Amino acid sequence: MSIAENILYFDEQLRNTPCRLVAVSKMHPIEKIKEAYDAGHRLFGENKVQELIDKRELLPHDIAWHLIGHLQTNKVKYIASFIDTIQSVDSLKLLQEIETRAERFARTAPINCMLQISIADEETKFGMSYDEAFALLQSEEYRRMQYLRITGVMGIATNTEDENKLRQEFIYLRECFQNLKDTFFMGSDYFREISMGMTSDWQLAVAEGSTMIRVGSGIFGARNYTK
Ligand SMILES: *Cc1c(COP(=O)(O)O)cnc(C)c1O
Image (cartoon, rainbow, N blue to C red; front, side, top):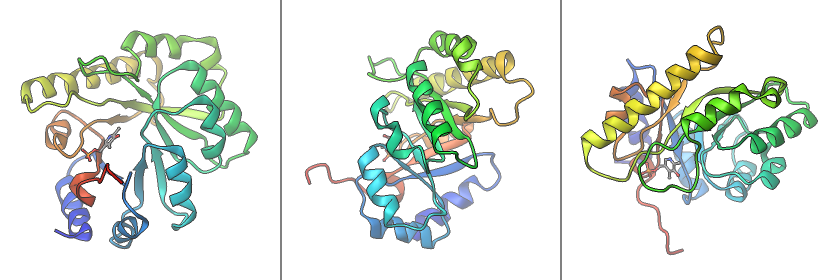
């Protein structure tokens, strides 16, 4: 299927769900992103800062860009003027830098941030435990922030075909979301996102309450890692 057909397919699959599609365009060229854009898609995800900046310059500016990969504190300044959402917030220190830069750029809208929570059993490099996320939201430093808002949680499941295992990880992330919502965001409509599910497991993720699936190869085809 073409990229336009894939976009249409996901639009149809998600039509009666609360879930949105983040088209993950990392390692794919501008022409392919334009195809998805021309099919009406406006929400794209990249995992590297430099690649994101380069692509954004060449594309229409009504695209909402989500950063989904690890973000180093010293690179926040390169994306803070335009980024819609940083899905991969994994420390208070990073959040403080986002706050500082968001203020400096005098944005019209706050930077949306999501707390990345480790849900896979592999020793993954990035993401916080639930307890760390809880402590972050309890901190004085976070409570004083004004130029960003936390819109939900993000998780990357184990790379496995074991559906039971995947389901358990998605359920766990949903429970984390619900507990944080009940504790810190009761009156805050904007805290509503559970970003989970990729090409191989998005159906399961949607069944377990995902509000954002991040699909790359399922839209753009296989990535070429040898280039
Ligand atoms: C690359 C990536 C995806 C998309 O992966 P596919 O398997 O191609 O759908 C989703 N989330 C994150 C964090 C990624 O880095």
